[in-house]
Image: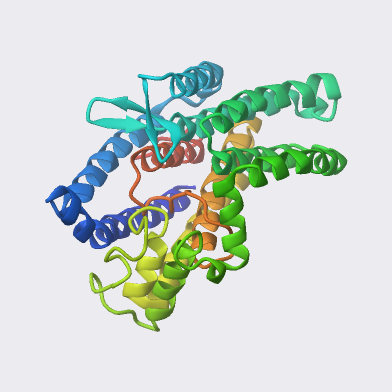
Length: 364
């Protein structure tokens, strides 16, 4: 396990380093134009990175026996913050969504926190009730009720993408716990009407789906992001235009330093750079899976499954959106995109995984 931990730390450090460079490259012109400080986003990103590093060290140091005990209290605290994010005056509205709680000069998204704490809570639940997970009253219903609470609060923000990603993470954990496949089929069929209403009853969500199917139908409106992302991908060529030399970040590609940073990487570093970053994520996830396979403790195993699912889903969705495989959704690229809350809590998740990997031995 020591070698696996070393590989995880090396790959993670490389991705974080790439993130620092690409956040500055993709945001400097925008920051200068709007804030008169080309390093505005870089400085904030480094501050969040430092805080995330501290939080990662803390989660690595927590006694594994205590992780199980604090899982439920942390989940309840996260629910409380989710409620606060909906309270006028306490929350900060961005693009019509109340997803942020403002704390001084910084803010955080409780929905990012709930992902980690619910994974911990469900890992504890599954470790205790794995043998009766297919029992309607003692296995399925309690976990469904627990999941429904954060999902409803996240949908009220509104943030359908985060809600769906949390459901996917939980579904993977349920499947690994041995839940009957028929329940997934029934749940999927039952959820289809609700998902249809949630998507097509909201104009901007409907526009995103239609833009995904045919972005050129509205090239200056709903299809603009996807088209500009594909232009960035196509103009990179084999070796790219050079670090800092990309054109799409110059007010063509929206969210260049957040949701579409992979497109900037491809434009500036070419297919070679895009493949290199993708391979780093594949290697990281593979090493994380090794941690899962080494776990003998049920709680730690389910916890690590949840963390692997979290990082994997965010990576696949972000890259998939950039290359046009999925509809536009504001999920950042883990460890690379600018985004305080996501970066901090993703590093916390990695701290938990490294904690799991050390079992009872000393990390350093």
